[in-house]
Amino acid sequence: MSSTVTDLDRRFMAACIRLSRRHLGRTGTNPSVGTLIVADEGKGPIIVGHGVTALGGRPHAEPVALGEAGERARGATAYVTLEPCAHHGRTPPCAEALVRAGVARVVVAATDPDDRVSGRGYEILRSAGIEVVPGVLADEARSVLSSYLTRSEKKRVEVTLKLAVSADGMIGRADAGQVPITGDVARAQSHVLRAEMDAILIGIGTALEDNPQLTCRLPGLSQRSPLRVVLDRHARLPLTSRLMQSVSDAPLAIATTMPRTPSAQLLEGAGARLIACEEHDGRIALPELLDDLAAQGVSSLLVEGGAAVAKAFLDEALADRVILFESDVVVGANGIAAPFTRANLSADYAASGEWLFGADRCNEFVRRS
Ligand code: AOF
Ligand code: ZN
Image (cartoon, rainbow, N blue to C red; front, side, top):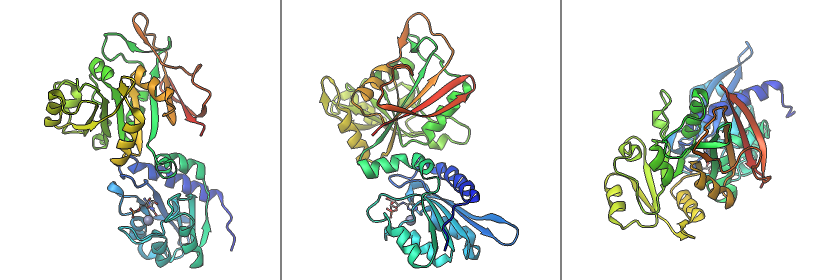
């Protein structure tokens, strides 16, 4: 049996990877996986079933897609972004579901590092006589699955640091509240980023100066706001802040070293969650906080500011990915200098992507591991 990869395989896998992004940040500790069932019923290949890991993580993608395809899955090709599972969890193994459905071929992008699955998923399929084609667009799928892979392989939260820098190397203006640096397209893009994350974090300085909401405010995606986390050692966040005022729209956690103080108790009483933190050199200890967040099911964290917080994550080598927006706006007097720019980002980071969003340039870097 040949296991040749065709251009069509790559096209369907690319579509499958795009589909898998739909539930990023919404599947708990489970990865957001995509599945397409493609059948050729005489008029060329068509998609007869599609599925994404359901909200909360179950059911998995494959049974959703097979359920839609029904009998049309017999003899079809299944495209899956992650090796189908082989274990009996709260749902039976997806590899067995594919066998039962009678698919002839399974094309997979990334192999699952989970010990219960790795290699075994392929084995179940192969021993049932199904042609298995692994590794198709593996890098692209690994990039979408990166927080799940970091959690499984490195046992920690994947941290993405986002920064928007003006033409004169500033991220804002002192005492001026929010200063627009990037334009509408880039802003929409950063809301997409929020929608795909489990959690988003800022420091109390930014919370007080900018009074941000940190929700996803794209039409139709308001339900996709991540858990919002404020580094707030002394629990100073005002009850009147936009973050607190929107606590019923999206969850909010206050990372504090003083959870028993009256101000912390007031915040908790008003609906915020408190995370009791350790202190290190007069700051919240970040590695321990990341462990706490991981234990609460957070796999991906977006760090949005400000300069001191960004610098702390970089200095402690805690940022896996950096997303840098650059605009041609000039901030001028009283500017707050960016903690880094493209020119002086540490050589530990390698360029991994480049886009133009309206007039703004966006560069992505990943930490060399
Ligand atoms: C798949 N398809 O859509 C997903 C998979 O706790 P459980 O039983 O849901 O199992 C979680 C594991 O299942 C997770 O660690 C990963 O190995 C796999 N996720 N597998 O076949 C899917 N989301
Ligand atoms: Zn499964």
